[in-house]
Length: 354
Image 1 (cartoon, rainbow, N blue to C red):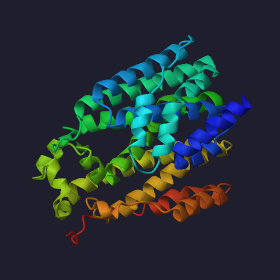
Image 2 (image 1 turned 90 degrees about the vertical axis):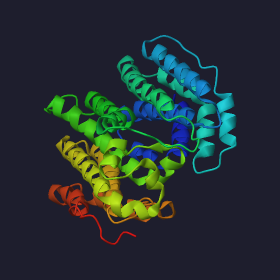
Image 3 (image 1 turned 135 degrees about the vertical axis):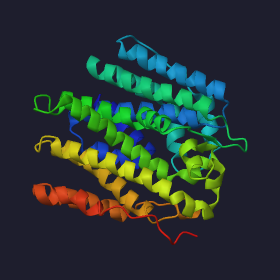
């Protein structure tokens, strides 16, 4: 299995440089199952987003993948006939990560074989996770039909909260259950609080992505800012395609930035509550939180509706955050201040918007 794991690691590196960095620091006991779960979730996400293939085929492919995962999770054998047409469609798409995603679709059967090698409890946890993720993706294919000049939007904050849970909150829940089982099973932690904070951790990271990628999503005919909230501010989803709208949008936008920040703060409390000896798990949690909060800080002063000025944390800044987290880890107060220094306070809506 050593050679097989090397291949899985190589595939992970090709489809996600940032997550691969986090995965590498995890203890061996959780690295493999979390890596396999990520690859399966990424395969499902790629299937759902392959817009050159019609929705019925994507729905069928997601069902096929979920059925295979469910069978394996229950301890039965399953096979996948393949996503050849979806992989071919990826060849027609240009953009970062496309070649890795095409390879992932071609090799999803191998990832399923790797799933079969896991312990029964780990297979069940992955099955539960993928059932939530894939069910959410199938709902999105109905909610957000292919872009045809019309933008489809979520309606309420409740729908947004449900969406962030289905995409990432459930991942925080899965991560918590997996690490609890393998890394610190005997630690005296409040189980209910830990799971709730793990869910908020995931929701916060997803909110950061949503709030950063508004123009990109609008181009796909999707608006994750609830329509009712926009209407309260005299706005419609289509208005967000105009950069000059930012002044009117910013007060509402800041309420969601505040919400994301609150979730990330819960994620940091979650991280610092984990046993100090579990350095690898704590670092794997800390890195996305620090990057997420750094992104939020930049978003507070940016015109996020201007797609030519997409906020992205530089690799040098990411390296600096990672190095500082490792250096300061033995010094608890200094390490805890890493998050506090980025959390410099909420900036009021800017009057400089054009």
